[in-house]
Image (tube, rainbow, N blue to C red; front, side, top):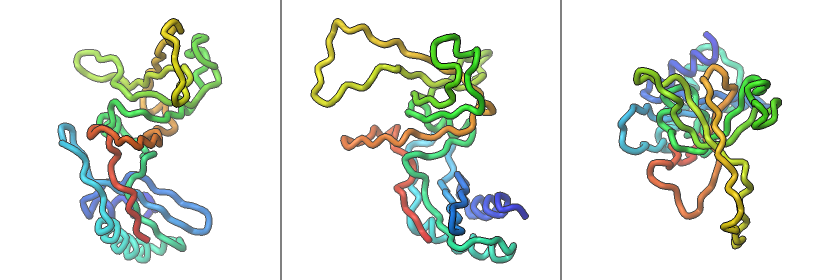
Length: 201
């Protein structure tokens, strides 16, 4: 069996979601898991050390049975730069700031608003336009205005930089992640990233 299949079957069989598989130098195999989520769910249930230990034990057995070559296994919860894999993840994190990388540069679609070679964007994740009640795509909105420095006065006469919008379909995206923004004043309940960074080796 392929590594993806082994890991996914093991993780989902234990009642968790597989978020990401990473192979690093030195034989490290890093698996990121989360609790399943459904629309309308109130809050996020964090992944605990016990969850990581449970998945680690089962994965070690499964990987040994299929003779998967690795030196070290690490199971963890999603961090603040969590990967968004599908429409359900986008729905779950609507309103969050994300880092988006397209598979191809914008090209002519940039229409002179941004560089035609640009593939990376940071903006607020939103639903795209709807037709017949069905979401056709997703979009991010952002402003290229520089962030004011702490204590800096912003002139009221200064013209606001307009918001820009990029609509996209997930099959056009190489990667989309939650932007790793640390707010020491605390995030709102809606925007609290899942998991608490617990890891188990």
